[in-house]
Amino acid sequence: MKQLSGLDAAFLYMETPTTYGHVNGLAIYQRPSPDFDPFQTVYERFGSLVGHIEPLRRRVVEVPFGLDHPYWFDDPHFDLDFHVRQIGLAPPGAADQLAEQVARIVGRPMDRRHPLWEVYVIEGLGDGRWAMLTKFHHATIDGAAGVIMLRMFTDLTPDAPWQFEPVEWEGETLPTDTEMLRHTMSNLAANPVKAARLNLRLVRNLADAAGLNSLSGIASRGRDLITSAVGRSEQAEAVGEQVRRVSLPITPAPPTPWNKSVGPHRRFAMRSTSLSNIKRLKDATGGTVNDVVMAICAGALREYLLRHDALPDAPLRAMVPVSIRTGLEEDPWTNRVSSIVAVLPTDCDHPVERVLRCQGAMEDAKHQLDLVPADTLTRATEATSPVVATAAVRLMARLSDRVNLPVNVVISNVPGPREPLFFAGAQMDHYVPVSTIANGIGLNITVHSYEDKLDFGLVADRDLIPDLWDLVDLHVAEVERLFEATGAEWAVPPSPPEGRRGAPTPPTSTAKPAKEKRATKKSQGAKKSQGAKNKRASVTAGKAGKAKAGKAAEPGKAAKQRAAAG
Figure 1 (cartoon, rainbow, N blue to C red):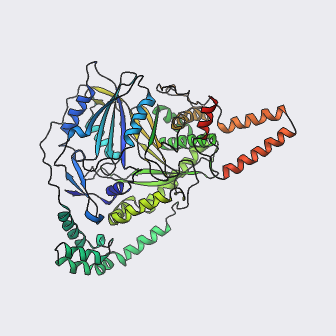
Figure 2: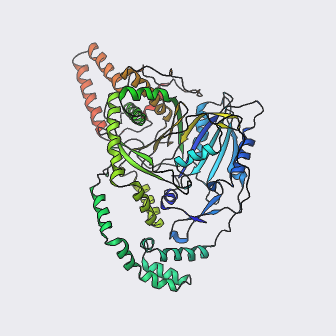
Figure 3: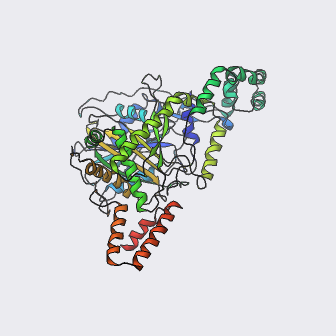
């Protein structure tokens, strides 16, 4: 048995009936031979890895009454058939059909009575390839640990021998609630800082009820121990002063259509671009790859909101996850992640200037980690009460339609391997991230690099962003727009999107942005008629400006109008 860290447990506490704590990855593979059986191969490989990788075999056991963080136990009833599953797409097996199946799978909570992972082998892709969707709870691994695991079940050459032979392991006997309660009382009473989360009288009474009479006196002295340990030391006062000097964005972010409470259903959309092209843009603008990625996201979000008449005057804010791994961790299968908040220049209409502003915004955001080390914040989660954390999540769910959070969107850029990977001889073509959303932040943009590809994976609430494919297409269109603005030469010619079933042609840089289109129409109208028409145009423009400053239009409005026109 092993207790979850406070950060690991936080991803369990975040869950509600409509928000989930799992993260996912979609790998698309070639078929090395006509007789290759993806499901059987995946089943055998993951079966042989269970004894080697702890997250594959451990399940969570919660502490009664939420008195302390849960524990991991090796599952005594492990069932590989529950975890490895197979589905097929109906013809024609288009990209949006694959994405729809992924959205349905990630829109279901995980069963905590089993180890928190699932793997889906998806066949029937129209081009003959197959896909593997891995679904792991964030309490088990973070993004960096996911990359470690990806490297473990893939090879660097197509004919590499499989290095993991099955090893024997035994499940642990699951404790009863009484046994878990006794263990928890001992743990809390021996750790006064942890005990401070609870009313000390409650600790003493529960200890008496559990038959641990000697703990009552320890609990009674807890307040004095806490005061001497952390309450009035010079170090504690210095840390407190440092925290007070940090400037964090605590004011509400500007409203967008997706900053509301989320439902249980999801949408997923994906596109790919060349990493070499992004590096060309990096050189042309003087930024970093991450600066360019952030600017691409900012430009795409700006254009999307313009098209929906929902662009706020103030710039959006993005929460950016940051890995704090050092490479020296004794346990790789735990979360080592923090986050920063960066301003997105969605109020800027020039692509190159957006890159420069993203560069400055990321530098400013990194100072948040300099002033308050992420490791300090991570340790602070150890003293978070599970009861309080769960109550806070529920309160946020109730308030997410009334009060805007300090951030609008989560944007993550995860670096992956540069060399090709193989799964039992099947070469991996893409690895598309499929992340999670939460109440108040109904959109997640995660980018993963692999070989010379940069794969965008967008996840959103199904109702808040019904035209998610339009938004992901705008990200690729923004790459083209940056090449036009910088005059840089393409390293790799832009490629069309994967085939979709009945999807419209995605926008490209040759199409005028929404703001430019509206300006052109207004100019043409002025040439055709003066006087009354110009007056009506001015009144209309005034109303549009007021609407933009007020409540954002519903996200599905433009999509419904296009459907009605068609």
